[in-house]
Amino acid sequence: MRTTDEPEGFDGEASNTSMISGASSPYQPTTEPVHARNVLGGIRCDMEYLKSYFGILKVVEVVLSLIGFICIETIMMCSPCGGVYFFEFVSCSAFVVTGVLLLIFSLNLHTKVPHINWSLTDLVNTAASTFFFFLSSLVLSCINHNTGAEIAAVIFGFLVTGVYGINTFLAVRRWRLGNGCQGAAQTSEYIRARTASRGEMEARPELA
Image 1 (cartoon, one colour):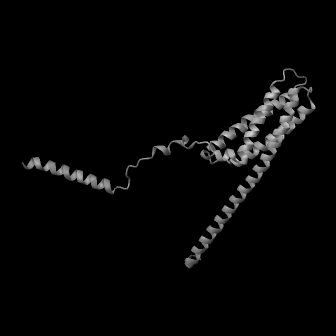
Image 2: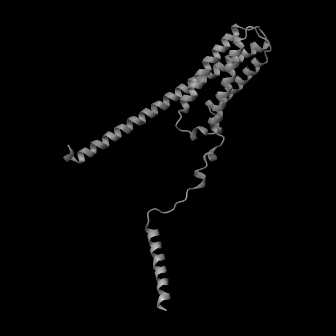
Image 3: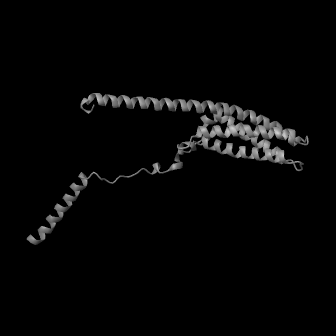
């Protein structure tokens, strides 16, 4: 009888010991929420951005770039064709790049990649599109055969140049304001750190 009771008591003590050690252990099993791993779970259409100045300008730029590209594509014969090809490349590139940025901003995808300076990226795109659209429209207006498609392409080219110019002005102002706020935050953080270190030195005069 004694031999059968001892293993049972030993097992009970072992189980109690394991329960106590498990309860007191700082390394407890944790569960991670499933939604935290879902990177694309926060995608939604940002209507506030589409209603803002930047959103409206982006939509107008995409539409005008597409219309200019369609107009230049309807030209079947040209000689010389340098101005036509240049305008075709600029309008197609601007349509694709601006369209991608419009999707990124309107779906809040830029918040998923915070390491990229999206304000500066938008500024570079709008400034480059303004310059190249103006240059290609100017070249096409000087070298053309006075066809309806070429005249329409030139008109829409100068229109989208003006829209990109307005967007560039607003993007520069937003970028400067962002840099100013960032610089002020860094300055205040530096002053706060200096004040804290100076207070620590005064509290501990034996370190001086």
